[in-house]
Length: 113
Image (cartoon, rainbow, N blue to C red; front, side):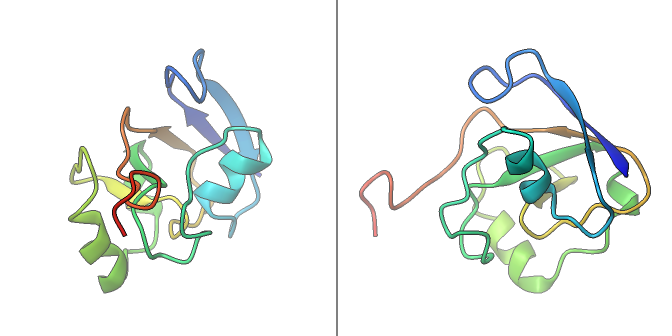
C-alpha cells in the first residue's frame, strides 16, 4: 500500500488526513474510498476537470499525463505545473502529498452545458 497525505481542504477534509491506496488505484478512487468526496462530474471518464488535484510531493513518480488530460487541465481552476486529474493519475510505490484546490469548475452544476 502507498501512503497519500491529503492536505487540509476546508470542505472536503478540514484537518487533512493520511490514507493508503494500492498501487494502480487512481488518486480519485483512493480519495472516494476513504470518504473524501472529491467531485468527479464525468464519473472518472476524463471529460471534465472537477477532480483536479495538485501533487505537492511525488509528482515525478506518476506516469505522464496523456494528451487528453493535458488539454483538460488547461481549463482547470488554479492550474499548476504539478496538477493532475485525480481520475487519471494512478498511485505507484512512491508516497504522495496532494492538495485539492479550493475551487472547481463544474459546467453542469453551474448550468452551462
